[in-house]
Image 1 (tube, rainbow, N blue to C red):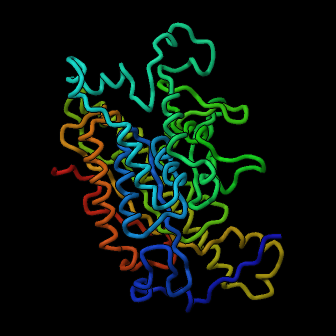
Image 2 (image 1 turned 120 degrees about the horizontal axis):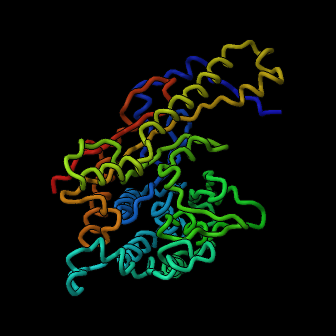
Image 3 (image 1 turned 180 degrees about the vertical axis):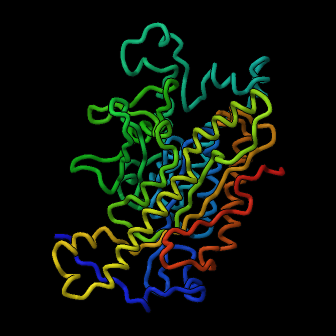
Amino acid sequence: MAKSLKPRSPKQRTLDAEKLSAFHVCGLDDLTGNHLQPVLVMQGGGALGAYQAGVYQAMHEADCEPEWVIGTSIGAINAGLIAGNPPERRVEALSEFWNRMSRDNSLLFPPFNLFPAATTMMLGLPGFFAPKPLNALSGGGPAQAAIYSTSPLEKTLSELIDTSLLNSNAPRLTVGAVNVVESSMKYFDSRDMPDGKALSVAHIMASGALPPAFPSVEIDGCYFWDGGILSNTPIEAVFDDSQRKSSLVFSVEVWHGHGPVPKTVNDALTRQKDIQYASRDDEHIMRQRQLHKLRHVITELVGHLPDEASQMENVVELAAYGCTTRMHVVRLSAPIIPGEDHTKDIDFSPQGVTRRWQAGREDALRMFDAKPWTKTAFDPLNPVIVHKDPGFDKPSKS
């Protein structure tokens, strides 16, 4: 039988701006005793993931270590670097990874130094992927069904991640991947791993195995690809959690759902990629807001039942679908750098990496300075409150 809920009284349900000011930055309780769990959610996006690293650095500097990190593709890699290191070494590990990924094309001979995206595609990226041109001719198995080998990435992550920490749930780690055969989303979660199983570098690599560039990764007899090809915005994992908690969710978005009408073919390629990998993030949040409101409505209705009726077994089971948690979603968006195009996700130039990292740190620090989650009044039946940076979806002026 489901556990009986204890609905709040109408007086307890009344929240106003004065009480809201009691919400602390993170990791503390508000005056009503609700703990705000800091959660960091990161999309896939290749080189754009440097922005996510900057956001984490700001969280670290604000003494707001996430209790849960969730990622897809490069977001899963950043999440693994965070969860796989103690707090005092996380920024260092992220910095080391992104330094290894940076390629200074000015040191190469023409024409490689003139076309950085093409150079990355032809030569690969040290520490990440290496070209396997014969795969296109030979085939022969899952490992050969890709243009590149990701063995260099496996070595890099093995050097930078302590796998024992991945499963310590400090923080909890969730990475999303797609089952190749079933075309279904699978979230590998350090809290919910089956007995005898543990998260590993392989799970992180599965989340970043973008076809046809990278080979699928076998886990327990199943093959997985990059989660971004099915759902690149893993915020759904927070709302669908079986043990939901009130949270302060930092949703770090590196693709832009909003943008101008293209005027050139290059513009069209850029806009198409943004739309595809933004992965309907606005709709995801809107739908989750609707579902979460219904959970609150259920709890409210149960609160109006007579005591005898509320204790009936079938009513208790129905009441279990209710929820009283509140989600503050802080949406941070990577800047649109002037001159970038559809190859921006493979812009691993030192300038591009540094620019995006700094932007992520600055955007997040600005949100910590404003602390909108402590000031915004809301309807008690609106359990998902969205906060956006003033520069959300606006082109960078730098």
